[in-house]
Length: 381
Image 1 (cartoon, helix red, strand yellow):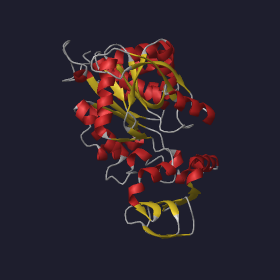
Image 2 (cartoon, rainbow, N blue to C red):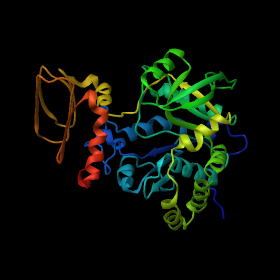
Image 3 (spheres, rainbow, N blue to C red):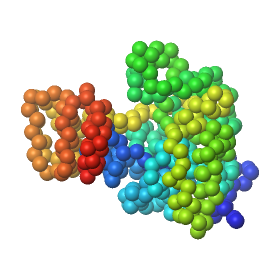
Image 4 (spheres, rainbow, N blue to C red):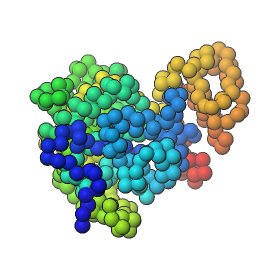
């Protein structure tokens, strides 16, 4: 069976940049952005920055100058139509659809296994579809360094220089500098650490040795799969079987038979942490601004330029009146919303659900989603 995709073979002389393929995993509902973000319309399909571009479209456009259309999309079957509408240039062969979500290891691992079948020399980069990054030029410079570093036989993560002692992100402990041509800022990774307490986060910030883990990985597909094989043999075996059938007429049958039974695990646990322990991980510290748009407070931060008084308003044709008020309003209706004498409020108005909270409690929106799910109110999720 010839699994070589047309035009994807690389000569042995191919440069690391010519071997690069970008992968965009577009999953996750973004429950802290309910009721704007839902299972049928997750946050990556929305324009949350008033830029005229959805998060997904912006991610693709940021990667295109590096990948030149060598971009693989991994998303849920339910989002196929919306993703194809936003990214008409993605080829069918580069659209990987999950019948059900299986966490990041299965999604990224399948992409790696498919690309390996097509060309074992590929260096892939995985970049989530729902992050806000600027400027693009600084991001692209960091990815180029990551590609050159990956070519030396490393799994490379792009770390984010912390701007405050966040307890919401995992951290990467940076080790010695690495001597890599084309990657002057490459460092070894000592370890990945879980989300810390505030006191520990303050220590990390003061030490200057830690970066936020933004979940961006660049690595030779062969090295990624080697770690999958060593650490998650059951998952690895299933992914390889699916990948071997991917560019054949057997794809749908094999996917339907294997995917539902694959174990759920995050890429950090399956690959990144054990690979760091083995000395196989490097980091490029990113100097660009980065936000994972984790809640409505983040949307307020990202849209400060569009303020009316001290209220950030999002939504086409939103009808909002404010007096002595601050906060954020996201409106998906034509209802008039009047805010008077209220501070740091978050109002999200959709045709079938209304959220009222404060920026300080924005992280707790997930609890409402969990409660609605437990009560069987899935029509609004």
